Each structure stands twice: as structure tokens, then as C-alpha cells.
Image (cartoon, protein in one colour):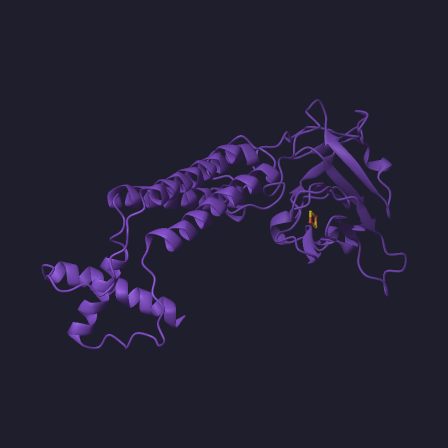
Length: 326
Ligand code: FES
């Protein structure tokens, strides 16, 4: 930490000192060393390779390549930067062995001394401008590569795509064979999967879980009142944690002493309360399961009354501010 502080003070001193006054000529402090054009070329080449590997990371990320290639490109970039620093330290920067630390630069003369040491330590470089460009380019490319994964935090543009579902008012609920579900088919202590009739089952917003509960046990929040059809509730089957399918239902056999009914995601055990609007009872999910309003038509079939009360699928940065598209 103190080394970092010293380096920071030295850099500030150099910068401020340069602005404040022209350089005076005085005797050297750091012994002049030989230039090493070959080492300079090697460092510039390594910086170029580091930049190329960092840019490759961004490109591989954009085309959706595997994480192995992403790790390889980023690792190579850091490796080349490390190699460039090692060559610079060993061959291009003057080094000296000190018995003790430099005294704190309290006096103006001490500060000038530090400035001079810093300048003279790097004056073996014959291509300073090229070096600065190389460092800037590599820093920029690496910075871009490190920022790129932030795109995975969620969609930034065109979020409508993530909010649309095939559910519309009047659309029937069907099973995986396309057979419409009747309200009478849905029994207590079991759960069922449903899809929208005549729509793409593969869409994220398509699959539902259906559960029948005793109407007196429902505790739906006010905004979800009327979403059930005589105790039958319908939720998105896609877990709001990371998008696995809700595949387990806990149906208590003796309500007074057993835990309440719950829909459970097998991936990380997020547990949702079907009687209370899909609220999270346990696990890493950060928001309730989206609920679909349903009704029973004159012929006894289950139909949607509209779209979900919230966006389906795993959570992303703006999901709480959004509503499923009507
Ligand atoms: S994906 Fe469901 S709990 Fe993690």
C-alpha cells in the first residue's frame, strides 16, 4: 500500500512539477544505461498481441462463442501484458538496489529529485511516443474486453422482445398434445402443464403450471384478485431466478401441521406460494412467479383473460420496472 502511495505521490509530483516550471539541467542521478531497440520492439509486439487478444474476446463474445474461447482470449491478453511488463522492467527501465526507502519528499528539492529519478529511469526508451500509444491501445482494448460481459446483465435495448408472450384474452389452455384443458380435469394435490392453443410452445412465455387450491385458502394480493378460476391458478412455468422449469409441487397432506402448498424449482430450490400470487417462500428467486388471469368458459374449458401480471423468465436489470406486453 505504501509503495502504491509513493508511486502516486511521485507521479503527481512529476506532473505538477512539469506544469510548474521548465526542466533545469543538473547532473544525472540514475546512471545512463544502454538503449535496447530489440527489447523495445519485443514490448511493442507483446502489447500489440495483448490488444489483439482483447479485441478477439469482444468479437468472440459478440458471436456467442464458448466460454473456453472467451477465457483463452482474455487470459492470453493478460499474459501478453504481463510479459510486456516483465521485459520492460528487466531490459528498458533502470533499476537500482537501495538499502533503505527514499526519504519522504517533503522539501521542494526532494520532489525535484524524485521527478528526475523518474524521468531518468525511463530515458533508455527511444520510441516513447510509440510506447504511449501502445499502452493506451492495450489499456483501451482490455478495458473494453472487461466491460463487455456487463451486457450479460440483461437486455439494454429492445426489451419488448422479452416482455411479449402468446397469451391473449380468450386463448384456451391446452396440454402438450394440444388437447384443451377443462376446469374439471384439474384436481387438487397435483399440478399440470399447459400451453397456449395454436401458438408456439417453445416461446419463453408459453408454458404454465396449473394448480387447484381450495378457494378459501387463496390469499391473492389485491392486484391479482380475480386471476383464479374457482381456485385454479395459473403461473408461468419458467423460474424467475435463472429460467429453469418449475417441475415440482409440494401438496401438504395435512394442512394444519404441514407447510403450505408450494411450487418448487429443482435447479436451486426457489419455492413459490401458489395461494399468494406466486410469492417467493424460499430460495434465490428475487420476484414472484408471473400469474396468468384465467376463467372457465361456458363449455367448461380454461381460457386466458389476458397476459401475465409481470414479465416472464429469469430476472434482468430492468425487469421490475416492466410489465408483460398486452
Ligand atoms: S433457476 Fe430456479 S431456483 Fe434457480
